[in-house]
Image 1 (spheres, rainbow, N blue to C red):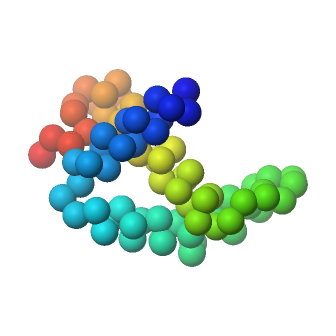
Image 2 (cartoon, rainbow, N blue to C red):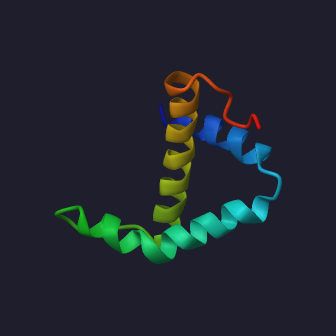
Image 3 (cartoon, rainbow, N blue to C red):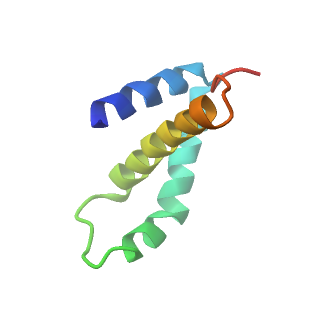
Length: 79
């Protein structure tokens, strides 16, 4: 499942017009969401903020793809 998520996230990422926007999203997740995510667990997550932000970004792209394909029946990168 992890490899499938990664393949789909890479496919969607390639479709972005500017890759620096994806990097900005990771920076945003690192600054704002990492503390919230860490506080949701009973134990401390033993990973750096960069790693956690990348995992959240890949999972988010994968979920976005699932919602587009199966929820609204549209291609992810279609205008």
